[in-house]
Length: 396
Ligand SMILES: *Cc1c(COP(=O)(O)O)cnc(C)c1O
Image 1 (spheres, rainbow, N blue to C red):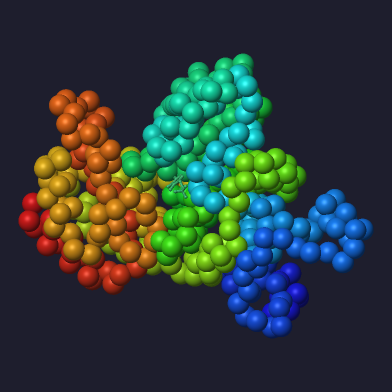
Image 2: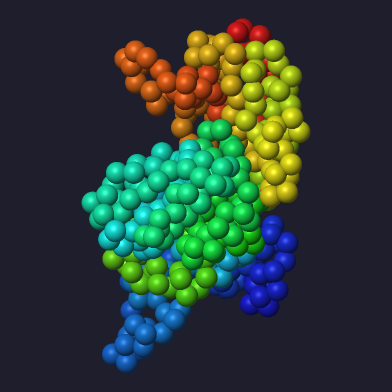
């Protein structure tokens, strides 16, 4: 592919961009090769010396690698950011970013509920550096404001809240952050850049677990951080180099391969998920469907303002509580029981699985978790997925 095509596709439609942009030309190969090498050799002392201080020079793959950079260019363009850096997992991206932004004694205001790994990191692990966090329901803007302290540095959030898919007013939260000169970080894994581009809403730093929809084939564990070029360079020179959690070349290549079909996969996930969500919303056993883009959802108006579509991920709650949840999950055939989501395969999970079976009493919150079923609608034929739900719901 010519360099000309590469230049011209950066600002093209996202699927055109993902098909071509960032791919280097090597003997006309339509698929860029995997640079699996750990190091790059030089002809002279001077040439090596130059690589240490020159941008876009490779010398060691922990720092940068051409195969990584192809995926990084595509992901930065997809999120409308200036630059991206790949990590060995979503958690590596999150922890490296937070360690970069925070120092001894700093404070974070974090949305809640939030991905459990992020919660554990901020609630416990970071305490060893004197870093503290308060967890707040971002739907309540006055609570966000009230949680800000003199030592607050970061507002951390997710586009959809974990499990219940609640949304919040992004521009209002960005305005609060600006007023207090706080950095805003959004984990955009759930919404994906197919439905939400946080940088366009004024968010400073976007993080993804690329293990989900971005790679899409349940065969890559990866993470990415997207922001301005200057900020990503700082992150690379510090946390990427020193903590050493960059993504390996083979995984980077697999991620690029997944990205080539990102747009069409997301369309199909959304179409199938909407069919199932509408069916569930009319089913007598279903108490509630947690999907703000559904018309009857109380956050519908806010959701359509901010999100261009749904993804394949949502949850619903059963009148029959944990007994019905167990029966439903055990009788599904195509929806496999498993954590994670965003791949080609349909998955079913209940957040109640995080509660120890020996625990004798339940809080109201835990009871809600137990009656909730989360599904990741895969790419199987929709008729088969609907049939699977029909037989499982009929058995309740
Ligand atoms: C999966 C996930 C993560 C963690 O990503 P890994 O790639 O598993 O480390 C972080 N945030 C969200 C919202 C996720 O779904």
